[in-house]
Image 1 (cartoon, rainbow over the protein chains, first blue to last red):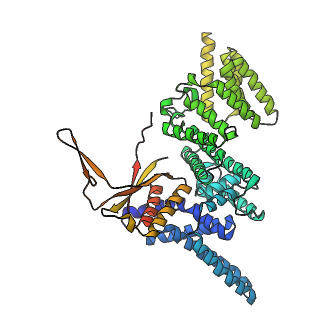
Image 2 (image 1 turned 90 degrees about the vertical axis):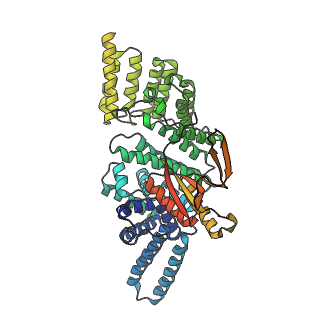
Image 3 (image 1 turned 180 degrees about the horizontal axis):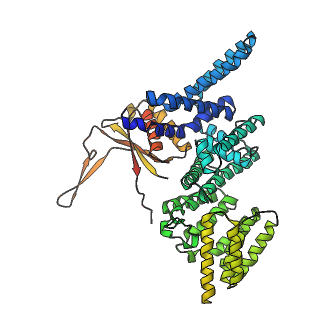
Length: 431
Length: 115
């Protein structure tokens, strides 16, 4: 092995881990029936690899090597437990038998690992018994193969906090005796929803970068897309899986157009559409068609993807089919009567029926929010400010935009709002 | 996400009917694994090559056999979507193990849009 290769060995191990860890954990979990233990054994195997591989080189079959190391650790820990009960001969025999069985089972589990194991792993990591943030962390860790440090960096929490979050989630799963299985029937629907929510939250965390490490956040969006594509292979009959992939592809295709030369945010109407990734748009459209073919066109992710598709089809902002967008939001609002959906609908209504109608719709959306929901949701005053500006009610518009500025911590958002204020001042002066 | 060409090389006189059954099974398993991991965009095995050479008079000469003279030629390839070259290499490593052959990895630098 050349020196050049030696210096890259850590990166090689990392890459091997990224592609092998999911199946490794899934295969061990099939035997241990506990994804927490499976993850620890796999992690131990990785630690051993990090010690041994730089010395001895990458083995021909890294997955089998890691499995063997995990198996050794499993038997070791069984033995350690056995030391405590050595005195009882019967128990010792029982343990010996267990040890043999565990060893055999692990020996063969990697050969038989099938997509179902990976699917079981995803369903277990996204189990509704866990808090949403626990599901996200566990999914990135177990299926995404991300390190605790990477996940912590992406979510701007201390590594220790993230580590605790993961161990708490594993403990909850273990205590709730969550079975390592793919649910069926009605339960499947509910559980697929939870998985999709987790994937979409990961995507959004990356996509709507509120603050922090942009590189890590881009990695999150890509990871979410990969999870989505993986799920599509595993659950090809679920229309909403295709729809979520469509939604993420269509939103992701605008990535290059969302930042200006100086890194400032560029909103949809002002984006240079030639920067959109047309191959990705094509993939998104195909996925959306698949969701619709499966009869899921009226489900939440399909509707959101259809709205995104309306934007992507328009060659200029003026060509956007806002009538259709309002209809799609109407349908979405029926299934998901959330203030955010209502606010987005209000923007579309403003485009179709004019700013006064839009303003009424914003107020209706705010009423839907009531007092409790969305404290600090700066988009309400921001949209209101926009509409008031179009109506020429400049003093009120200025007030709303200032209110929005006070409500967001995101520097890019503040920049956008500050620009809006400048425009207002100009309009005021010339008017 | 970048895409990579992972091309497998076979000896010139390769005869698929003589391929070890275990190799076939392993390649099949690797393909399933790539699909389950969401990285595989495309995969194929290639048939015999015809070569086309432009002539000085502007005509084209078609001959049997690959264009380059070598002992081994591309027998099939994967198009994979990976986070980076390291991940593509990790998959290619598995490709080497499954095919018992030689594998070459190249990043696909551009991918013209259909319109």
